[in-house]
Length: 625
Ligand SMILES: Cc1cc2nc3c(=O)[nH]c(=O)nc-3n(C[C@H](O)[C@H](O)[C@H](O)COP(=O)(O)OP(=O)(O)OC[C@H]3O[C@@H](n4cnc5c(N)ncnc54)[C@H](O)[C@@H]3O)c2cc1C
Image (cartoon, rainbow, N blue to C red; front, side, top):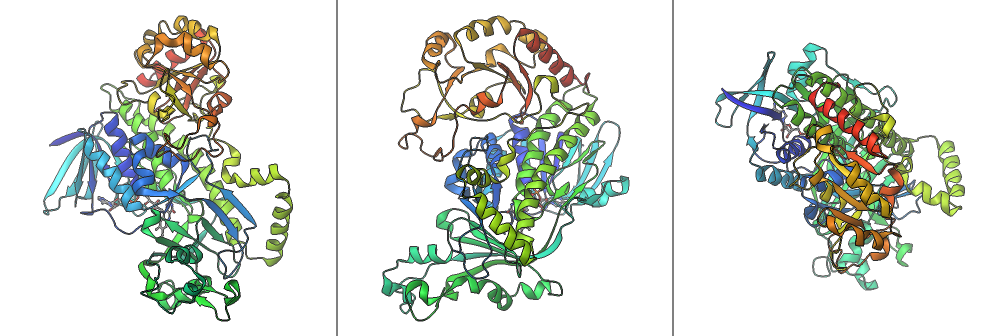
């Protein structure tokens, strides 16, 4: 029988991301995907900065702004029932790099293109294989293996034996419904956010009118160009239309040149979902926003965007709710992505949550697949305890947006808008409000026994990312992301040690403190793979001189004053970027970072480092689980 370390059921964004990360870690995996090709229907369009960081982690950063999408800009909260240019009563600024990941807040992307890029990554790893047209139809387990049956694209029944099955088969997936539900696994409604409403989601492709195609269009007389007409009717930035009569959201997605537009609106009680997705009804909801009063242009007649410039790509009703499974891993079978949890649309958290599942699962599976490792149940339970904590905060962000969007009481809306208007008169409060969910800082897990980090050494917090350059690099060199140097593909260990250098003595102390690192960590950390980061800008030159012996593994943090568009090609403009972010959030000199970019431990000196290294060794061997 065919035998493999991990079978992944489903190659949506979650399954593809998991396979790519497993491939990076050299874990043999086969992905079984029911469909022959990538689903061309763009569903998810918003991806948050964690999601961007995880795309970067699989090695496709260069595709993000060239093929996959663009910065999402502001989230504008408006109440108007017919004007997308109405002044927002609240804005979240997603252009800035203030979240700590080194990336802007959100991108709006084309899901099929993102999936294609992920599949290309899968194809680049020898340890990964994607089988399309393969429908999983049976699962069995014994003590040592899980057996996955599937029908291949020629109709042949096949079976694979694997150490683990990761089911990323979506919210109605086979694995939960046909296998795990009978064992007590269920998808439960979130008790804090009992949201469940039907929406219609539209994707339109816009071809702007031209003087040749629409000679009578009134804006030509005013000197408008087709591009300006497009910007007028389908403006930049994303809008939460908090219209109590019909909450909606809308905005561009994909690359600028794709000219794709998403509009989603809620259905009222009694409305037939299918009928409401038909063009005549869609028109009644959307066209008020695409009809501009003549006075906006000093014209006597209203200006309506030409209907024949709109191609409907999707128009379907959808029920959104907040639900998650009680158990995400049972025996050798694991649920991830939509198979384990679903979100309402307001926070753009569906795909990013699946990505977080995948990335944080990949390294655990790499450990669980090691010969002789037996504590996989404890390892995987700890995985979903952490994931559930993080899901709560994703949901909290979703709830804030959702409540804002769905408020139906006109009195409450009036009071809220005035209150927010007043707050925004004070610049620092305005800035704080514009941070949106980033006000809460980066994710930090609350420790419960078994979680893989040391709480007394500051473990469990997300590790910030900044830009850096190798020591001695030419001024004109394009900056690098710290994740890319810390987790360089040539490095061999799962966990990485980062040394933050602030003062002259630090370097000498480090060489003393790091002696015995490999022994203490039982080979889980290696001295030659340590990354040295000079994070204190003031001492930079002094340290640079001293640490010249560490060339190749020593990097200096790049600060915002070094911004030079000519050599930052492909990197977003560093608005709100803080080169000292890593130093501010990390209190130790030696940081053991997990592969999912969370801190295992922050150590001040040799003693802490020794203890953390030994604890890491016990964790990875299963002794400390
Ligand atoms: C209208 C709409 C708007 C959305 N907007 C957003 C948004 O803005 N941002 C966001 O992050 N998310 C959004 N989402 C949600 C997002 O699309 C999902 O969270 C995401 O696709 C989940 O990815 P996944 O890989 O976990 O599951 P899926 O994408 O559902 O993939 C599951 C895969 O498993 C395969 N499969 C299923 N059963 C089997 C089987 N038996 N054998 C083999 N293969 C199988 C399927 O073919 C599929 O390819 C939206 C969803 C919808 C519908």
